Amino acid sequence: MSAVSETIVREYFEHHAFLVRQPRKYIAPNKPEDDDIDFFVLNPRPQPPPGDRPFVLTSEDLTFVERAIVVVKGWHTETFSSARLASTPEIFRFVGTKVFQQAARVFGENGAPLKILVVPALPHEAKARDESIAVLRAKGVDAVIPFRTMLTDLIMHTEANRNYQKSDLLQIIRILKNYDFFREPQLELFKSKRRKR
Image (tube, rainbow, N blue to C red; front, side, top):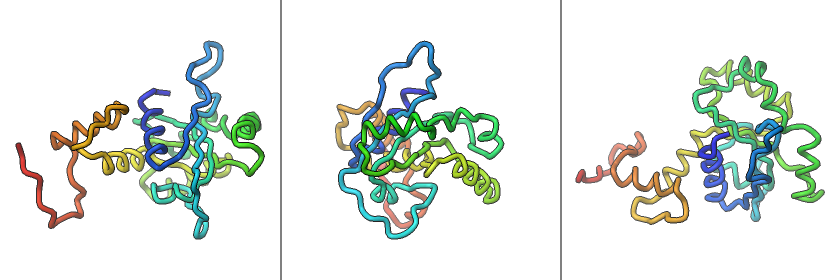
C-alpha cells in the first residue's frame, strides 16, 4: 500500500482527535503486505450513538466510533463493486481471528473494535452500491470510509494562512489552497469570491 494513502488516513483520524498506532513500519520480505491491518485507532472521548451506525461513515459519524482496526486499500483508480470484491478475496484477510487476537493485545478485552475498510469508491448506482455493501457486510466488515470523505474533510479544515511544518500532506494542501487550486463548495452561491493575485 502506498505511503501516501497511509498518510491521508493517519492525518484524517488524528484531525478527529483519534490516537493512531501503526502496528508495523516495515514490509516483511516473505509476507504479503496486505496480510495485516494498517492502523489501530482509539477515540479517547467517544459519544454514544443516537441510533444504528451507518455502514458508509462520514466525518460526523466518527464521534461514535470508540476503537477500530483500519485497513487501507489505496487503489485509487478502482471502484469496489461486488465483482471486484468477489475477484479479490485477499481484501478480507483482516477480518480473521489472527487480527482480533492482535487487536485484543492492543485494546484489551473491553469490547471488540470495529473493522473499518478505507476504500477509493463504492459504485454510484444504488443497486450496485447496495450489492457491494451486502458483500462487505457478509465478509465481516463493519464500516467503510471512502477516500473522498477523508480528502474533502482535510481540504476543508486546512487553512491557507497556517504553516503545517510537521505535516507534508497538510502543507501541500495549504499551498494548493493558497494558489486557488481548490474551488469553494458549489452551494455557496452568495459568498464573495477571493480576489485573484
